[in-house]
Image 1 (cartoon, rainbow, N blue to C red):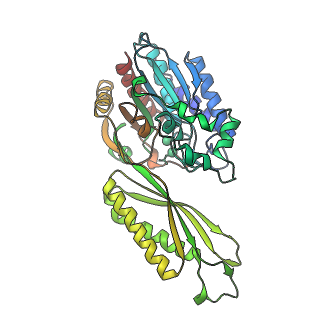
Image 2: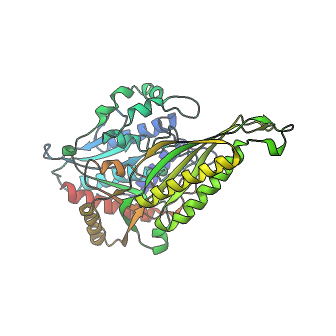
Image 3: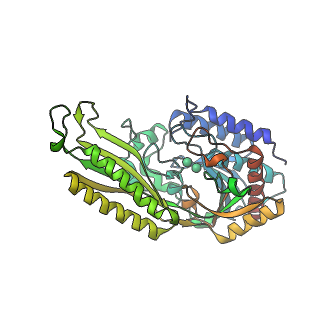
Length: 409
Ligand code: GLV
Ligand code: MN
Ligand code: MN
């Protein structure tokens, strides 16, 4: 069946309505907007004739049953949750585009393998601080101990939110799937960088995914009266924090040619009053790269810089690791299959690294995994202006459909 471009545009636009605010889309994990988007896609999956279920983590799984039920499934999918004030394509493309691709191959004759579309929950770390939670649970990588303690910015716990969805955090382990059940996983996603736009190629075949290491830095100074405390006598936690942020930037700039980046994206200042010298600052740091050695060096340099600053400023600084993931390589055979699909379709392509994280990182633990990227306008993502030309999206869907068909036929 030819996929109607209008079908794809309509459904991406519809999903964008869930969580639309003044600036971009805010559809955090398991919020009402996220659940509404899940319900919307579930009904589309139903209409497409997929058998839909939800696992113990809340991942939605739609199955197009193959002729031989004993064969492992070929899976595609992505996520529907967004960052605060995000765009409408990150994740959604792999869900709507994944369904479009499955609808396409439904019409290409009977398939031996079952094909699944999975909507992974909690891909973005924005609400609970943990990334790709749904695919981690599926790959048996859930850190239930840490997740039990996770709370959002309003103090609502992850466990609470799960139980509101009739899910039990104790049972997350049951969402784990075995390697024998899965033949391959292929995720379609926007590039979120400018490599394809600059080269003019329509498809990026991902060779490796950069992994995030995340940590919390707590700087303890002494809160004091902002009027009566002389400048020389202060232990201002925010001043130390500012120096640490600049040091992190400098260190990451030094490693930038090796593809490593570091970001301080969250800063909490206590007590946060205009007339009080800040006594405590907490910040969250996201360090990423595809070169493990460079990331280790970067982390060590940051630790060294922190000790120097703490000493100079007479503040107490502590680092607590949140997560440390390793860069993940995609499967060569799946990448070659994607390459062949590009050649057969006549789509220009190139190999590239993903600098963003994806559910494919965890699925690669379960099955041979590959990723297909389409160009992002101005490389923009995690931003309301995130955009991909629909003609490019349709090429991505064509390549995904052909790849899934070759795997499932
Ligand atoms: C996912 O969007 C990430 O933060 O890489
Ligand atoms: Mn994202
Ligand atoms: Mn994404």
